[in-house]
Length: 65
Image (cartoon, rainbow, N blue to C red; front, side, top):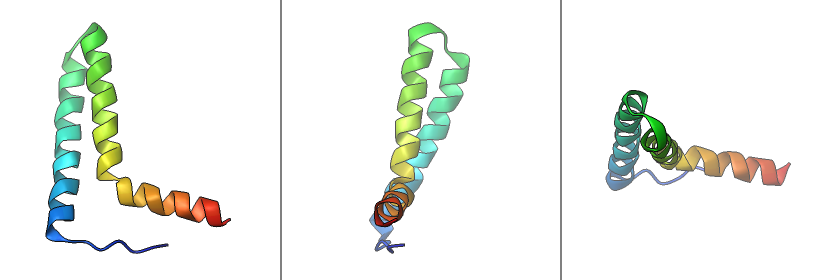
């Protein structure tokens, strides 16, 4: 799998996305209705952003096979 250059800025943004995802999940559990749905969607997108390099590696591997 491809190795991505891990700079301090990349690490900070990854940790930030993961932290925001956890906070949003916590809020989503406590929310109701359409607000809960919006919070869950946003939390999942932030988690995907935190895992962006792993996702890219998996897609690259899938395309090669």
